[in-house]
Length: 123
Image (tube, rainbow, N blue to C red; front, side):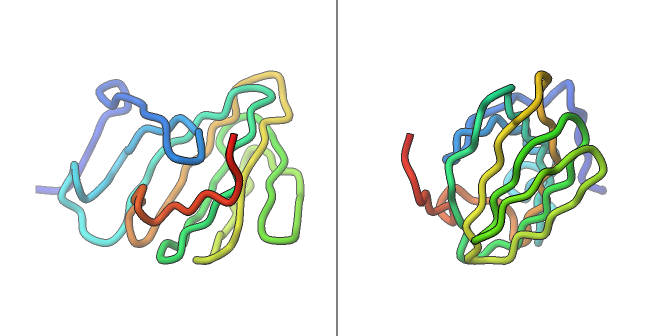
């Protein structure tokens, strides 16, 4: 049976970088093998904590709002339709610079794990 989920049935939680996410597809819940897909919501003015993943390659895809992405030594604006590849070991964070919630899809391979999230700054 294929892994599937419905957004209305998924409770959000706060990750180590302080973003609110919903695990849309994750091996620990849905039985898939090598990756995860989550939706993150960043409130207006909120910035996620700068962090990195040693094992995980991550892709962000912006679906609503706009913000400012920090990736390693670079900083750039992002908006609906933009996708950003975050290689393992790259520091990253994102700030919502708009007046509405910033929504992004987070694809991780291997799947997201709190244990693979190293905070580079604290609140």
